[in-house]
Amino acid sequence: MTTVLVAWAIILAVVLGVGWLITHSLASSVDPWDNDASRWFASERTSELSDAANVGTFLGETPVGMAVAAVVAAVVSLWKRSWRPAAYFALLVAGIGGFYWVTTTLITRQRPPVRILDPGLVPDHSFPSGHVATAIAVYGGTALLCWWLAPRTRPWVWVLVLVPVFVALSRLYQGAHHITDVLASLCYTTAWIAVVATVLLRRSSPATGDRAAHDGDAQRHQDDGDAAGSHRHDPSRSVGRL
Image 1 (tube, rainbow, N blue to C red):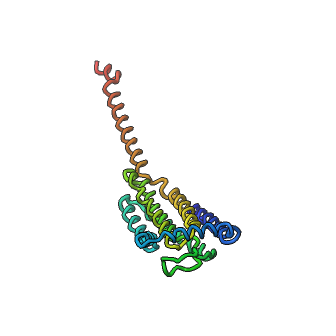
Image 2: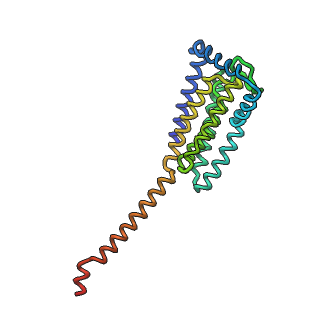
Image 3: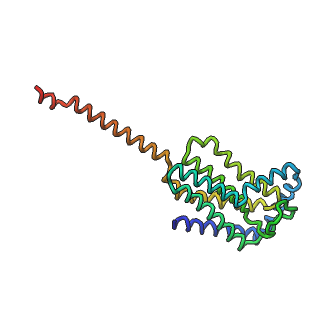
């Protein structure tokens, strides 16, 4: 647990440092092209795309993400009879919640200079994107869990990876965040998933356990076969019977 806390603190420090640079020293360099990108997304708006963006935003909502994480954690924990999947999702969700709360409290950045299609947002909480972080942690974390614990699902996990991409594009389209806000969430959430997965999932791969059990069974069968063969062909036993 100490490793996880130290890693969380380091990631948070990096996020705060990047946020400070974007809103202070590098603001004059970053804001012009960041704002231009936001204006481009706004210029491409249509009623159909707006409806799709609403769906993407919904998938990244914190209550939705927490509900999905809770269901997946419960199902996988019961399936594997292990507490690790539940702890994995609990740490993921708690970690990104902490990153977002601390960062938006200490770093203020105005939303893009376009009409925002998601009403009710705090005007100066543009950095980082909580929706994107939630989507990456929940859907990306689920994809990694499936890849790790259920190898047969690997050909289909890419579908889960597309959900955070959809959420990110939706938030940019709605004018809720700049591109750098989304990229920051992508980087720190990916790093956080890597930390939590390394600590909690590294030793819980069923494939490894199955291979070890299979190898052990094979070795026992081989030993039994060698013992039986030795018994049948032991010269001393043959001499004894003469």
